[in-house]
Picture (cartoon, rainbow, N blue to C red):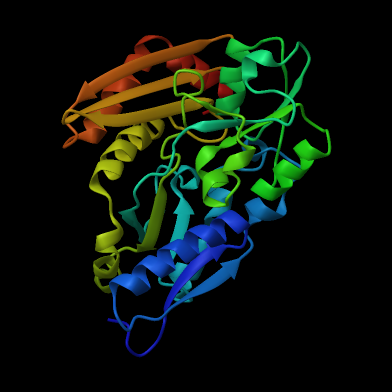
Length: 309
């Protein structure tokens, strides 16, 4: 137990990241009597560069590198991430010690004028930060004008309120965690917008081999969520998933069986490949590999090659 010093959590300083870190801190202090937990707030490169889409500046790993440096330097003991922002392959010396129970994994349609996507008239400007969402929107609603949208949740909502967009698409989990559930006009079911691998789940990263911190985090680990996101992340890992690749993967467990869906597309949505797999939750990576292979059989490799993945 950390009796001589506080346990330090490295976190980004956005409102959502701080909510997530505080949530983990409060859970740990409630679970372990006498444990003192403090936050180390940091600004990452992904937070600093807001005028360029993520796929053009190196991808979502930009949100975690500085936090990993704090772990490596011993300035922090753990880092709390939105799991969808965590690269599929961690650098040597780090491990995902716990995956928290998933919040709503769906995408949310947010608009001040319209109740659902299908109501948007031709030419309506829709903002999104991800190629995954963009490719699905372009495939299903080719008459809409899809434009980049960066910044934290508050910034994106402000841009919508200033009239820059007719609607924006955000992760429902972030809106709900920050108390903005009333801003959601409609939730997009996975059939409309398949989530990103790990969307809605928190990942807690530590230095590999730090058994003391690993033990403290064990009660926060949610096995069912972990099985689902391990399958999803394996799809992305197999296909080189990053911000450069429009790719979605989503799994659920029902009746002791894991059901996994995934897609790969071109950014314009004109080529759109889908596949599904099902099997035991005990072997999620095998299902992820099966689904990735099914997408390859449909021609995923040629899409990935053209994207430079």
